[in-house]
Length: 294
Image (cartoon, rainbow, N blue to C red; front, side):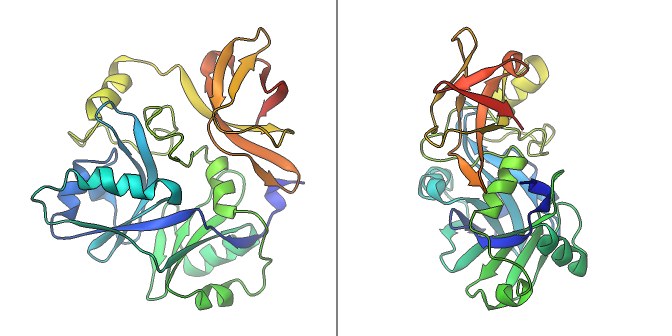
């Protein structure tokens, strides 16, 4: 099966939208996130992250501007913890953070996404918003892709996708995997700094914006250090491989760990692993199963 031949759409039950509103929301978020939120416009989104004071990532997300509010699109399983942590810093700021329960997230790929993006002339890292939905350009080097956020009803989505197949896997999760963009969970939170988790390659870190939570560690790594590990997309044939399983080299030395659950795309098994850069060109294994870099 060729990934580039996929076309269709699916519901993304594992993603959700957080709304941050209030007259101090931009200033507040600027002091918390790794990217420069002033660069988010009403047609351009960005990748960003929220970390501990030690620079360890709590969550990774896309930031969208919806009128005067900010929407954060992130993994559902970390949302409660994320809101609790972020809310601790509100203090006297006029900011409200809430989960948008009535927003549903879908993904489209292949021709289904290509036509949607072309018909609406949505640029790279761009999005279109209207009364019923938001459509994000989620293209990558493998295939066209789009994220559709429906506001309360999926009637509009059904009209947009009427000619295309509803796929039996999570399209958005596949695209995140292809982007080497890990979905942080309660199990994997606060494990690594943003550079290890590919935020730098996705322009999710701004080194000129000034102070934010964890900034000192992130900046020091950028200017003075060099990362020894990074996320990679892995292929394998063992459905029992799970988050936290160690990755070994031929000598049995631990050179990394599995960082996401396995996704089965029509018989091809994918997962994200954090791997030492020195090991990426050598044979690697997990649970005695050989892993291949995609």
